[in-house]
Amino acid sequence: MKIGIWYLESTNAQGESINRENYQLIEKLADLSGAKLEIVEVDKLHEYDLTMIFVGGGGVEGRFLKIADKLPQPVFLLTSGANNSLAASMEILSYMRQNDIPGEIIHGSETYMAERIKSLYKVFKAKKRLNSFRLGRVGVPSDWLISSDVDADLSKEINGIEIIDIKMEEFFNEIKRKEYEDNSFTLEFKKNPFDEKEKELALEIYGALKRIVDKYQLDGVTVRCFDLLKPVKSTGCVALAILNAEGIYAACEGDVPALISMAVLGELTGEPCFQANPSKILTDTNEIIFAHCTLPVNMYDSVELMTHYESGLGVSFRGHIREGEVTVFKTDGLAQRDFVSGGILEENLNQYNLCRTQIKLKMEESVEYFLKESIGNHHIIIKGDYVDLINEFYRWF
Image (tube, rainbow, N blue to C red):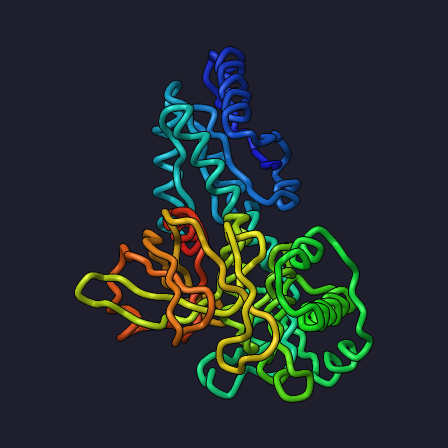
């Protein structure tokens, strides 16, 4: 975790002692944040995921002005509580506002400053990663996802995410090879009681999709998975569940916005992501039931293997996710509009008329969103409360 800092040195007569105190503060912030804060020249700042300006003291505003156009944006101003560092930073920030330069002052206790640095680093590291992502779309979105297609050219232009189109025929040909490589996830999956032939076929589908991921050097993939039902007589549920656990974002039904939502959430938090359908909304209690037939194999506490809900074919998961705090998130295909809410997973359900993994959440944000403003059907759920981090991401995206 490396952060580039340009040190804006004060011309105060006590400059040597001021510098010594400032360098000590930088070292303390590095220790508290776990980041490597490197003081570098202005022309080196672009090499870092996150850059900051340390305002060494008063009287530096003119020097900032001379290099303002060379600074990566946004501009974050680190300040101390001495030697007019804060006053100078406020004057600089005012200039930035007048000239539409985004940024902020990072000032306060050492603990607060370190936590702010950590949060910003997560955001900008994720942003930089996503700007070079390659996502595969195997087949077009399922016919019922009428709002979930994404223009690949616009995606590349606006947010740097490259969408690679791959024909279903190539996927079918890979499945015919009936090959896969075992790993800890496949071996653990095999231990679960279920029809052995069905489990083997599900893993062959996994192997086929993994080879496509490797061939096209993908960071994530989504599949028009219902097209597997007739020719293969199985589903992609296991394949997607294992790929997600391996850190390859994998979404159902050719849903690219859901895949991008997974990528944003996963890069920010490092948590496995559950793509699910809102199945029932309880407006009186602000609760919602989500369900789907696959989820990452490293997300559930226990699992029962079953057939796919809609078709009765293949192998799918009824996973039990531990109760507690969760985050619900969705962004559109160009990552320009988003919804995020904290919530409490209250109960794992076992209803006969829903997809296999079923959870009931008590939402923080109003469930009216799903009825009036919903960004498509599928939403992404992770364990833990990451609402502030996601909002921070969209502040700077």
